[in-house]
Structures are given as C-alpha cells and as structure tokens.
Image 1 (cartoon, protein in one colour):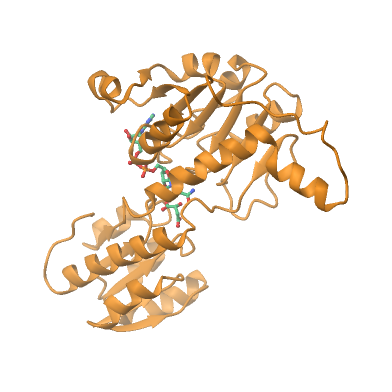
Image 2: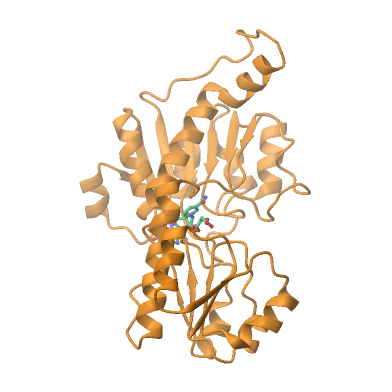
Length: 308
Ligand code: NAD
Ligand code: MLT
C-alpha cells in the first residue's frame, strides 16, 4: 500500500510508515497537483500546510485515512471525507504541552515587551525607560476554552500566582472547582481579566467570540493572547482596540489567513507576533508524527483508529 506525506513530518513518524508501506514525501503541492496524484494513495498524512478540499477527497479513490499530525482539522473537509467513508484522524495530545508553553512564553513576552526591547537594543539603542512592563503575579487570567491546552495554561499560570477565570460551556462547575478555576461568561471575563487567552477550536460558535463589543468592555490595561486559531478573536476589532489604545497589547501566533501579510494585525501598536509556532518543538513534532503514523498503520492493516 502507498502513503503520501504532503507536509514535513518528523523522521520518527516516517520510519514507522516506511516499515509497513511505500511512502512518498512530496510537499508544497497545489490543489491541482494533489488531485492528480491522490488516486494512487491509500493514506494521506498532513500537517497544517495541505488543504484537503472536497475536490481532493473526490479524487481519492483508494484513500482509507487522512492523518493530521496536529490538533486542528480545519484544513480538511471532514464532511466530504465522511461522505466518502474516509477516516480523518488527528493527534490530539502530542503538541498540547508545547502549545501551552508557547502561550505562557507569549504572555510573559507581552508583559515585559521582550521582542520590542530585543529589536531596540539590536538597533544600537539603550531605551530602558521605553519598555516598562507589568508583573503577572496576582493578576487575573481569563481562559476561553478550558480543554487540553487551556487547562495546561491555567495550571502554569496558577504556578505564577495568577487568578484564573474561564469560559467553556462543556466544562462542569465541579471540574472547574477541582482546577481552582472560576467559571464566568465571556463578557464577565472581558470586564475583569488583565490577560485573556483563547483555546477553543474555530467553529461557528467560537468565530469572533471576542469582538468589538467585548473589547469595549475590557480594561485599558488588558492584554490578549491567541495561540489557538485565527478568527476566534475578530482581527479588525482587535486592530482597532490596539491602535486606539483601548487595550494594552496582544500576542498572536495564529491568523485568519497565514502568512498574515495582507491582514490588519502585524503592523498594529503593541502587538507581538509569531508565525504559528505553538506546536514547533522537537518533542511535539515527534509526538504528533508517531501518533498519526501508528493510526495509519492500524487502519490500513484493518484495525480501528483511536482519534477519529
Ligand atoms: P481541546 O478540544 O482539548 O479543547 C478545546 C476546548 O474548547 C474544549 O474544552 C471545548 O469544550 C471548548 N469549546 C468548544 N466550543 C466552545 C465555545 N463555544 N466556547 C468556549 N469553549 C468552547 O483542544 P486543544 O487541544 O486544547 O486545542 C485548542 C486550540 O488550540 C485548537 O484550536 C487547536 O487547533 C489549537 N492549537 C494551536 C496550536 C498552535 O500551533 N498555535 C497548537 C495546538 C493546538
Ligand atoms: C495544531 O492544530 O495542531 C496546531 O495548529 C499546530 C499545527 O498546525 O501544526
């Protein structure tokens, strides 16, 4: 059987696939090129670069499984795949610690202006007065989406003596209590939090969950972080809130369109940005690659998938 790997995948995942199947690694394929190649493959393994559209799925005559080495399956037309009987699996746990750590890194960099100060000193300026920061100690962090990554972020922030508020309609009061977290509405969090971080999937309910109305409720010292998916925070409303200094800053890893060169965010006041690096650690990339490779082996050998 043949497996197509169409985004870079760590060696450990490739080795597992190669022990069982013929594996072709061909990256940066256009939709047309993928449509042309896909009929010969039994499985497709991707990260976030490949768009598995309905057109690709319709051409995938032998395909049994699409494996996404990561969490979000928003680059796969899951409905089209399901209609065709193709299983879509992800790797839900392999990169969660890396994403949580990146969120904390972004929060701290935002609080202390680390990227701006680094750029200033490298431009041969000594501007100690310009980069006055804030402590996170004793501050309130609002977590929208208290799933795997949100919970890990909350735990780490508690370790820095932050108070945690959260909104997640699928988390019980009892579970929140166990975690030492107070559940509130998005609007209550907008009014009370010093830092807000979003960790939901991008769905019709979470798109623009933070919009102009919520920015209007925030404190002027509020800072917001998105290491989940572009579009959970409305980008135009965020740009307006930053440029009018309605809020104090934002740290953004993900964008509605990537790379975000034509979007409204990267030139805003008081924003720090990274190019979708939440899962970019050696550990996470090994974990997700091994996880999807094992799923592909199981399914192509007639077994079942754990993370369908
Ligand atoms: P998860 O499924 O474990 O948690 C998501 C949480 O969001 C769940 O608890 C769910 O109940 C909650 N949720 C769903 N709808 C909601 C709504 N309307 N309002 C509030 N909460 C809602 O997922 P996860 O692994 O924690 O991933 C979170 C996000 O991070 C995903 O969007 C994922 O794609 C993204 N992610 C990004 C990176 C990166 O590189 N930046 C890395 C990993 C994951
Ligand atoms: C994910 O959903 O797993 C992350 O966005 C990381 C990635 O796309 O590789």
